[in-house]
Length: 255
Image 1 (spheres, rainbow, N blue to C red):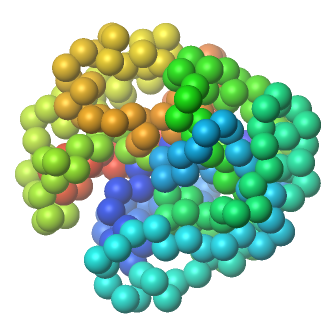
Image 2 (cartoon, rainbow, N blue to C red):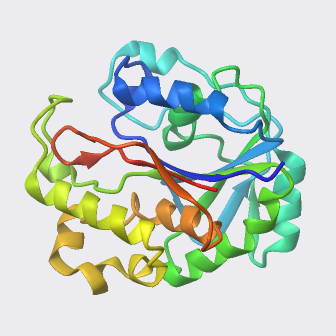
């Protein structure tokens, strides 16, 4: 069955163990989706020279964060690797290299932990090539569209706003005005499928984009979601909200 595409704002690692409106919505969203044959995640937390894809049969659960409660470090997400899917993607998209030295970082498994808690669906993770312009990464996502018809669920995991310099440690801190403004701006551009503007956030949204994203690592996964979607597909926002004053937790579902 053809799969939708998702973008999930993952936010703080504390959301892995939190019981809040965001995590409850992810847990209800998973059963609403058609069951995937496999999952491909593009996470903000795997930045490489060139594009790589995990090819190991049992991806490691990577705890790539520090200073959090010990219970987080004992959690595992022991899903099988989507080895065959990864091989076919490497064969179908030029210059995608295999990776045996990576697994699932918290940008990937933090959201899968809630969406698919049984961890029984094969998963692969694809990296973000720091050398490529955003337009080239969007084109990689365009090449991934055909796998949706083969039951592959494509998930971009980042955040619509991500400025840790302005973060407040209280989860329910009052959202900052600029974070609300940028989150709403991106929402409207997604609804109008203005992908051209979204591919060039600093060029089309200026200082507001720079404030929302001092670096673009948490923004880029959104482009993989948009690129893997057709222009005429329905757009939904399964979750909307801002945590810690400056972190948009918006989720996007297309198709």
